[in-house]
Image 1: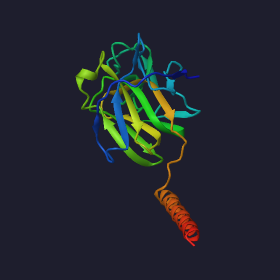
Image 2: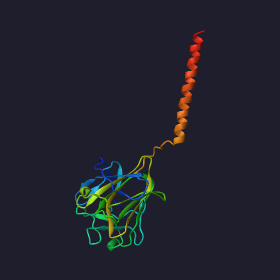
Image 3: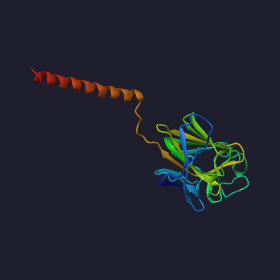
Image 4: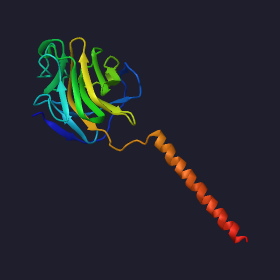
Length: 230
């Protein structure tokens, strides 16, 4: 069974990847994670569930990983076709058209519940790496790694935190690569807040009710004043 952990902490770092699809404000991105010796970095967002791939990629449950060919490829170590970072010697997910992970692009992660957060330790980001966020079959936004500033990298990797904009959620994430490999580790996710956002029509109805109540109260007060003058 895939190793799953609960992680809590404070959000660190802020930066932006290249956005390659609209709307631009559907998903917000920051950088920053908690380093663990030999395992790369982990999310420091409170209340997340983490998948570290030590027992493979989950194919059932709340997060389901799927891919063409032999299925999701979980590898370990750095090879010619798959290099995650200098500080991660553990098992990680490789999306590739070459080597041990050949034919595993794209990897689709389907979630049983809508999310408002997803994070991953992104190893050696390249322009060929793409991560896309969907609500059902609707693409919300995609990011590539071609604009990652080298200043945010640590030993060749960076922890990327993707947040749904207010009122926005997603239930599918797709990782793809068009060249050598897209390596990532320590995926983390958080189920979206279930508190419903009031619809505009409902908000107007409530406002109308408040205004009507105020007018009735004012009218009653006038009647009391008129009677006292008699």
